[in-house]
Image 1: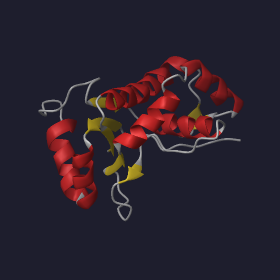
Image 2: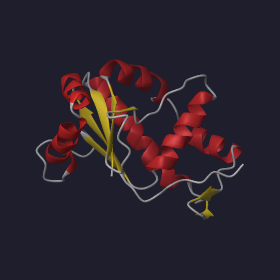
Image 3: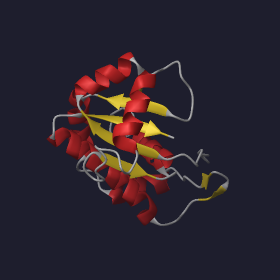
Image 4: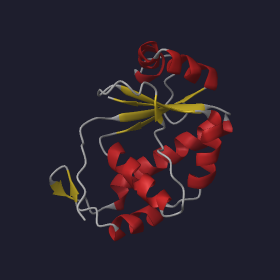
Length: 168
C-alpha cells in the first residue's frame, strides 16, 4: 500500500473554552477572524506557544493520518483535529473544533501513546510515498508533531477546555 498526502499547509491547535467554541460554531467566519486576531499571530494577546498555541508544519496531515489509523487498531475512531466548524466550507483556512468533554476522552487515550509505538505502526502500514517523495526515515521529524498533539490535549484537559484547529 502506498499513501499520498497533501503537504504545504500548516496546522495550529488552540486551547479555547467551550463557550467560544459555541460562538465559532454559530458563525465560523467570525470565528476564523477571532482566532487569527487573538491566537494565530505571534503578537496576538492569547498566543502562548506550548500553552494556548501548538504549531505544526506541513507534516500535520501525516500526523493526523497516523493517529487515525493507529487508534483504529485500538478500536477508537476520532480525528484529533476535531469536526469541521463549517461543513459547507471547503478551503485552506478551515477551522475544526473539539469540545472539552471530547478533549478529556481523547486525552485519556493518547496521553500514554509513545512515539515509538506509532513509528512501529507506521512501518507496518508501509507509508512510503508522501507528496511524491520517499518517506523520511527518521522518527524525529514526526515525534515533534505527535508530541505537540499530545501536549495540546493534555493542556486543554488540565484547563477544562476544548481545542480549535486551524489549517492554513
